[in-house]
Length: 271
Length: 271
Figure 1 (spheres, rainbow over the protein chains, first blue to last red):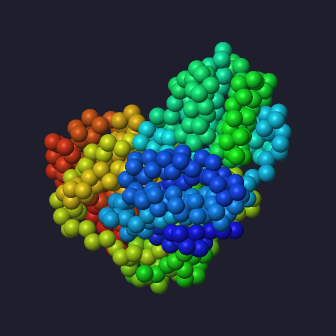
Figure 2: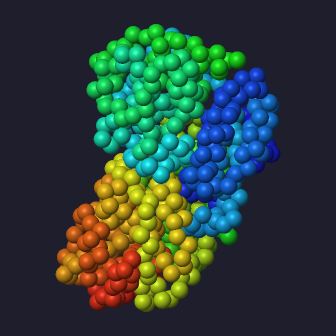
């Protein structure tokens, strides 16, 4: 598969890179269709925000151009972007100046069963909790051992995603998705100031809900509130929206608002 | 400098390695003197414990032999070992089976000012807090963004280390060291069930204190208790023990027990 390192074909990096040593970097998982990147501006904005918060200098215009060129060669598939702080001497102190490393890797679009989007998925209740770290909350950084541990908790193919909570038991997100619930017509999702990844599809859905005039709340979500919700769905930038049909003994129908938002983001992803 | 990948000379790894993608792996920073590894058994034991907790299959005897061969070629310096879960397809799910990647990199022994060990160091009070994640606490894993952020907080060369606390303000460790205090003849260090790295030199000092008959307590340590301590010192496997002489407005003399333990671990490191 297609793979670029700093804008040129390549499949390797130095063992001294800080992305490996410390997870000192960021990533984006990007859907590409017919050479086009539906959520390009959101991916670039999130990457820029991550660079700002981690003090990684990046020429965002260069990165965006490189991503578009890569997408043009890829055609249709997934582009995974990894940005690291680059190589460093021994020790945690960030090198001054640093030379960030840009990696782009192609993969096929994942082939999920059509039933996931149509009938919804069952959520596995992960026991791995998300630690609270405000300095990293929201970022799609390379420190992802919690997700690795959570995803290793289940093999049952019936569960397409796992539910992750924080140390206090609050509902945060899926292992590789964000989660929304709908109660009495209001759309609710976890605010992500202590942990979690602020997904680009989450941001898109928040904006689309505002356009539709749907009330939306970003706040703490208790587990009991999730169980009592009218509708629940997951989202990410690859599959759009999957309704959640079951978690433990609780079952949900696929709701009207979920279907409406799903159709909107599907058009967006496939346009 | 000397660099091996899976036992053969090499300086690169695949962009698809999970050590890069997720920080899915472990590391050890190992002092080597005259081809010998003073704390070999402790490093191997900690690596084995990390592999067990992260479910990374590793032939520990192979790893130990490889490390000894590398040390033989290195002579005197630092051997950094990075062990990752190896390459994987897209997604957090650990590949079954997986083929772990073993990286060994050489660096010179760091040349710290002699005054650090003789007169002690000043600690910088980091505002970056360690998040509480019991599943990863104690491990020397590759998710180290908190240490990167903490180390970036100060440039003042007068501060040789930074103090790291948890989200509740409890004293945990240095950015690249463990921390002990002595109060009324009792040696105290943070228990590491929620966060922190269980250093091999910390383990050695705990054992040496037991041999000396010094009472030792592993427990929560409040910031005020640190400030009120009779003696404070830092340790790691490269420099042994540094007395702490100052933190904010507080100053400490270099105490008797600190000197005694420092002499013991110096003999161990230099023998």
